[in-house]
Each structure stands twice: as structure tokens, then as C-alpha cells.
Amino acid sequence: MFGGNNMQFILRLLGTLMGLYMLLIFVRVMLSWFGGARLGRPAEILTQITDPYLNWWRRFPIFRTGYIDLSPVAALAALSLAQTICSTMAYYGRLSLGILLAIVLQAVWSVVSFALGFFIIVLLLRLIAYLTNRNIYSTFWRIIDSISQPVLYRITRIFFRRRLINYLAGVILSTGVLVILGVAGTFLVRALLEVFQRLPL
Image 1 (cartoon, rainbow, N blue to C red):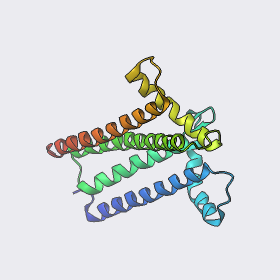
Image 2 (tube, rainbow, N blue to C red):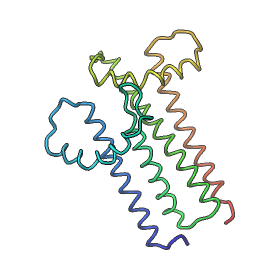
Image 3 (cartoon, rainbow, N blue to C red):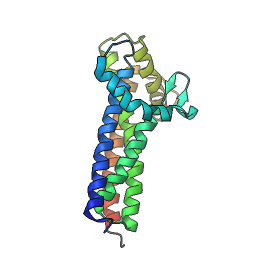
Image 4 (cartoon, rainbow, N blue to C red):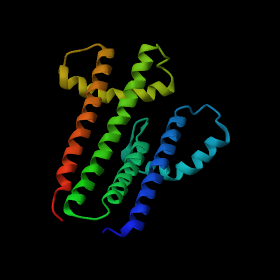
């Protein structure tokens, strides 16, 4: 067995703590989009808890493109990867070739699914803004646009090549494609995990 029940408990606990920390970071990132608002002591405590980790990722120029800072995405993806590794090892309680392959697969998929989920949320926000005639010239919506535009461009180009299409149709299409990729990927990963579990030690 991999380290016995105590090790499995520790790994489960680590996975749970990472999940909670990811939630705190996500809330912190959302709050940063409303920089002008005064949120009081709870926001200050949240900042003290999350900013040391986020600041470590902000040191890398590769995550900055113009006004866009993707370091929080990288920080959350790294935590998601570590959480998946801990959860998988805690679940199986031992190591084998199949389990190692399962860990690698789940780690990769956790990063991919996180990115898919992030872009789906961004596109849904953009869709809501479009349908409700929000002020798209505010800082918040400029950030949403700068994140969503590259995704919209790439997906619509795959389906329509150089033809121009309605913006709303592009947002709906792109959101649908990402949702389908997420669902199909989940089923594929589950099927592969079942295959890996049958591999010999």
C-alpha cells in the first residue's frame, strides 16, 4: 500500500485544503475586477491570505500580455494540478503503472478543464452583457473583452474561415463548442481511467 491509511488521510486533507484555497483565490480575482469598491476587513483578510501566492506567479513576464495579467489563471491551474495528484493518490492508496498514468492524465485534464471552465464563464459573462445592454466600455468589460476576443476569433475561424458572422452568434457558438469539448473530454478521461485501472502492477 502507498503509505497506509495515514498517508491517504493526509493526501485527502491536502486536496481539500487546496480546493478551499482555490475558491478563495477565485473570489479574490473576482473582487479585483471591482477595484474601486470598498469591501472592508473581510476583503483585507482575503488579500493577506491569497496575495503572497498570487504575487509569486506575477513575477513571470510570460503571463502578461499588454494589459492582461494571466498569472491568476496559471496560479489556479497549478493548484488544480496539485489537488488532482493528491486526490488520485489518496483514492488508490498505492502506486502502479496504471495509477501513474491515471495521475498524469487527470493532472493534464484538470488544467485543460480549468481553462475550458474559465473561458466558458468569461464568454457567458460577455453574452449576458450583450443581451442586457451593459456598459461595455467600463474597465471590467474591457478586461472580459480582451480575454474573450482571442477565443472567439479562433473558434469562429475554424467554423467559418474568413466569413464574417454576427457577434452574438459567435459568442453562442464559441460557448457551445467549449461546453461540448468539456463534456466530451470528461467522458473520454473517465473511459481511459477505467482502462488504466486494469493495467497490471
